[in-house]
Length: 389
Image (cartoon, rainbow, N blue to C red; front, side, top):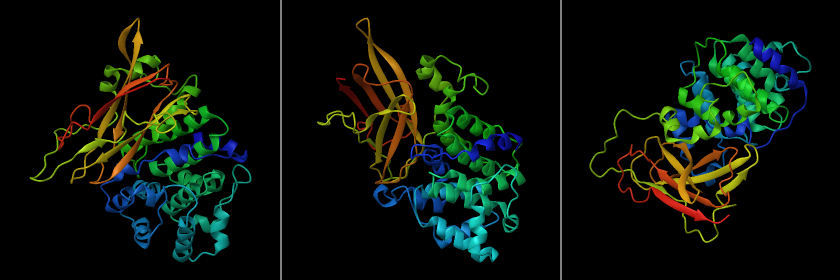
């Protein structure tokens, strides 16, 4: 917690954030998809969910269940999405009823700290740290342009419970949101502090959840010239996009054996992106990513089978010409989460510091490229794309 105390100094510099940011781009709820409450939220059609889902009484009961880990509770809030919604009011009212508080009591917890070391409100000290974390995360996801409103509760919970990994990660994400407009190296540093923090013994996040979070946070590590980089991070940039690299750093957990299905059950992953799109790909699902100075690709994958698929991955092979010979200049991989029958998922792939139209776009997308899932048909799993820059 001493690390976080030092990093709190810039909380008192007002900083605004935007939608492509630590709070809004770290979607880790998929790691908890076995929970039925989570599944209901994850598999809502995108046009209904719109990255926001309303808290129900069953969710509030889930939050109050002492047998449920805080990591699962924050994952449920993560599944609800970000942006203005009724969730903040719903959860505040829940706390008013639960603790016999007044509106002013809760509102005092959601004010920016006025100075370092400010005394935490007495009524807030009587609240369980789970509720402080959930309140801070709900506030931050509701109004991610003003993350400082969530700092007070998040810091109190993490400071009094340094053994809680979930509490420290929520504080880390809120501080990272503040640093987003101030210092990208500090954004990365504060999340590394959460990752490498105290000897956590409670509320441990699943490794997959941490992987989801850092698939975004790692975009900022290049901003730091020294200190927190691992051996893999120190590789030359071109070595990170080879078959050998991905074999040593897989993007998903391979099962020990392929799944088997009963008669009539099947999975059929389908690549929706088409190479013959008359309008081209650029500005539709390929775009320049300003944050990473690279390429963003949105790959849409559907499951036309009748059984939920397991996690697998997609691979993008980017081709180029070197002295008139065709060569592979990049191999990029990203995880495909479990997809319910009849549903589709948008997989966002970021290729930092690389513009795919250089000068032309020539690449192949392959789903389940190493054949983990036995599918109804394998013929719709790949497509080859060529477009002049």
